[in-house]
Length: 273
Image (cartoon, rainbow, N blue to C red; front, side, top):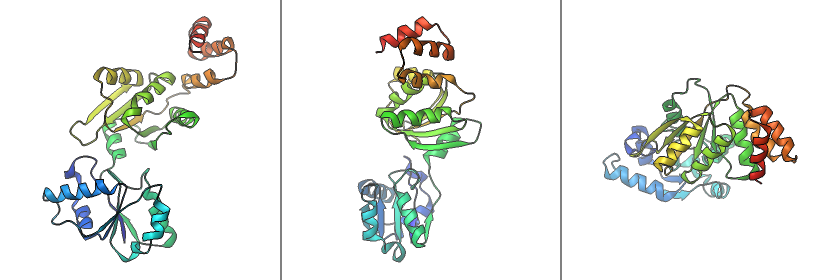
């Protein structure tokens, strides 16, 4: 049987007794990174949380080798105690474990998903946002038109949106939001459950200024964007800027939507050419 086991986000004590029992009986581990999983098991054993280390095979399973790996080990999913883990948190959420779930469903192979740590729900609970309804997006595309369109879609959404973001891209994300809607309410959680865990809440502009002042971009982040409360015309600024129109026409459109004088917008557009 295949079991999906959540692993601690950072604090080993967040592991569950049930997860430990499954680990100890496993004969095969499918892992996002085998080194990370082996290290986790060694730490759990050294700290007395596991009675023994499992006698098991460890194989990587990711978006690149997943289909080939299933051809290799598919028959073992029914015959043995197989565990799938990501590096941290709930597996099969924005994660290649989704391939395993689908594989089992198509072949009617029994599988189970254990409850446990999840960065998405922990961050949303900590945010204080009141709607109680949110969309989980995972990671935005890294660059280009796809990233711009995805972010604009989220900023227009009436629902709160939860994103994962890497430390080297967080500043850029905040800059992109500020350029479109500087007053949008955000919540950012850094290094959840770890020693340097921090929570930040405020407008996109304020958060960007604060994190720059504190030089606090390092770490793994969950970012929550509050849902749009109105049509938010500021969100269309980037669309107007990218149009194949003369600067004076763009300036008139921006002034009408966002306020300010046509001459001010015209001067800014010319400076950014």
